[in-house]
Image (tube, rainbow, N blue to C red; front, side, top):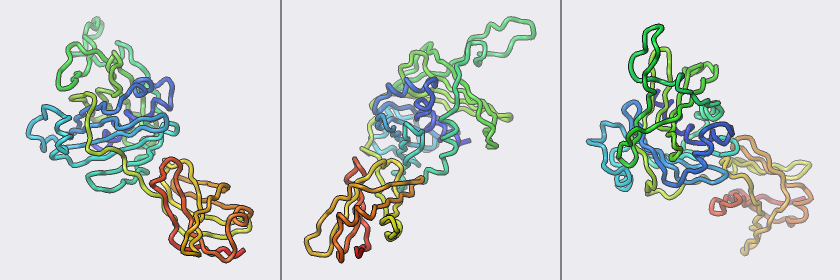
Length: 340
């Protein structure tokens, strides 16, 4: 269940709200601010999750995990603990999720200094992002104390999870509870009920309690603290650079280029660099056809465009610039000889 809750937290705090207008996460996350955070505990692992950036296109979360045994005592200030580079942590990463498609776009581990493959999480995220959460009324919610005997009136109070903000426990905190059934996907969660608790006043974007009921055990993720303006030594999510994967291929229609590129690059500018002379010329290629499948990209330059731009007998390399991310440009290494 440890891995499940790690993904569950990321998913619920991500963009299921934008996928379904009736999902209660929508307006909460729309009000989220940079630095909003929660501190969760599940399976003896403490995890901080914070909003690092949010636009109409995507949201970036920062996640720091530390085994509870690595902390001699609970830090008086989680902000100071992060400023001190989170002593004892075993995982520190950033995750970006695309809002229109609900896809996990990128995951970078600062503790490993490497990008992590996101495809292994795709099916779980996709399923969770589309769960139809429905609000539970008082009769459906968990109660405090043993159930009454048959025929007796149930006078038990409705259970609410604890609410802690900046280390201070809030008294008489009230919550809204939502539930959904996991689809029949043959996974260990198939058909299980997921219950999510949000603060009733709607002041905070994150859920404070997530519970999964199985046939053997009830597993829960609880929030032990929350707050805002959490600092970070890492200013932004590191980006990958697109890569040319093979040499250009000539066809009857023109020339094909093949690349691997992260899915968060939506559009590109293409240039041909004339390397025939010492003074290189950079020539824009305004018209080309781009198609992609996952991270595989194919660019086709029409024959007419090649004839208008390139000079016979010259050698060229190709320069691809992601629109809006000019610092992450890539250039082909092997020269292309234009001989129409």
